Figure 1: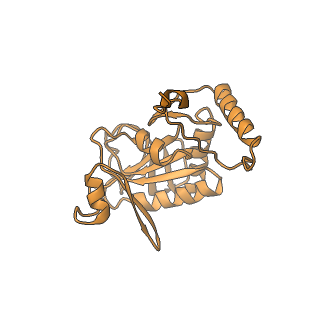
Figure 2: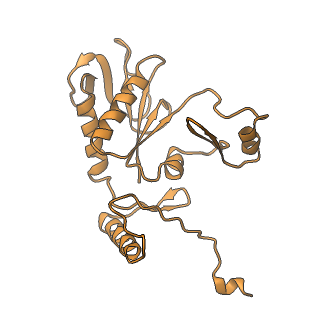
Figure 3: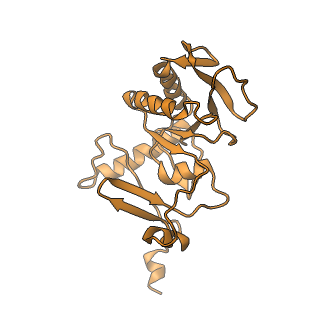
Length: 219
């Protein structure tokens, strides 16, 4: 299951700067990391646009331009962070969420000046750019590489799995040996097929749980 960490703080506290530095350091460490920015602004295209009108139908859409892609989806009222992780970041070991101070997820609080640490849920570490070094509960400017190593150890320690399985958007809990068994079985079967060599690349397998058998389709 993907581990999610929030980087939270008040407006203009330096959340984006810290996220960018952590993402760069995690990339150096080879940690597959996803990034989400939570905002109170509207992000979907206007209803009159092509992608906006499709989203109004309750369907997902992608705006494909010369400089990249933008995925748009209607917001479900009961959407959860792990649902987003399962759907859009299935290969990520770590997911960094910028914002989300009110969400009940582990979070790094980016402090502005000498402000008191607020009583938001999940704060396990404070980042203060006016402080140097990195202690157990407080890290400061220049400690981003050390902080990234801690996050890497978090996801590649007891939380790391060699395989991840989702039933819909729900992660399936597996012990390490079960995850290794699933990974080895799938890679072994694929390797016997022409073009099935994985070469240490992530492998995505999608199964339609509602599909009927060919025999049933004949009658």
